[in-house]
Length: 387
Image 1 (cartoon, helix red, strand yellow):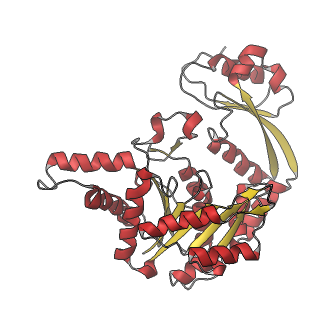
Image 2: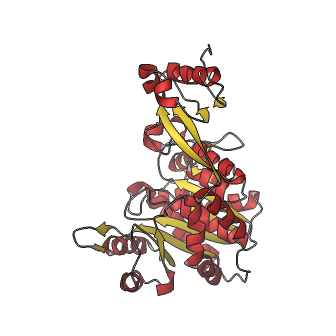
């Protein structure tokens, strides 16, 4: 069994989950069975009670587990079917440790972060590989390196790497190269500091994935290679994509990330066949037809609140060679100003569900407008009457 751990540094929301998912895509195309999991350092047991404005979408798995939205990326980019075992939070870890302590499982010992909490985290890494048939487990560590709540998770994977052996474990660090406009250059110092923090903990990343708005010049790569103790070819550029996140696996393939992974883990595998993936990307970028779909919701201003809905529309459009232009409409705006002002000329309407009564009347007005004007609609208006 091979294990890959994806950590992040400098700032949050860099796209660790997307990077992990794209790596899963490339390894699957090489013939491996891949399973992904996400470790979240927050103390909530799961994100089910968290505000969409703060956390974004809650992604629900087939077994009903409410999980982080990154698990949606995992399922969209790979063939894996995930369960509650694929998402672990600090809240779940401490809850289980305290449950065992109350039962007497620790035989009266003092319960500590090391070894009891770290052992619980390591057990979940092994557990997911036992219950799901796979060759590689990719584990994303949420949060940012240096966050106090994330330290037990980093310590756990440090221990795990020692126990599993260096040929079976790979660390990938996703980091930011900020562009300073006044200086006209990318800055590598934040990444150097982030990797230094990891190395203090005892983790040496073998691959650096550098998020950037601009191309990374060779001298920057050389500097990162030297100061972060990473081979030059393992300093990977992950630039902002122009059109779609589905371009990212092709970008990482051009950077030969999958080759580096296979080399480090001693895997002799054929090159990935990405022809059908390229066809899908081409259809997203330059479709034959276009339609306008109105999404009427109550969390519209948060771009990740309806993430799976937007991605489902993208997938459906790519399958039919149709470009989907989403018109995001706040249900409360419809309540205030009427549906016609916002929905005139759309080809379809999608009304997602939500909690509470806020925005309900706007959703009903949107549904009525669609029905009266014979516009196709898919609506989930919970606890409300349809006129």
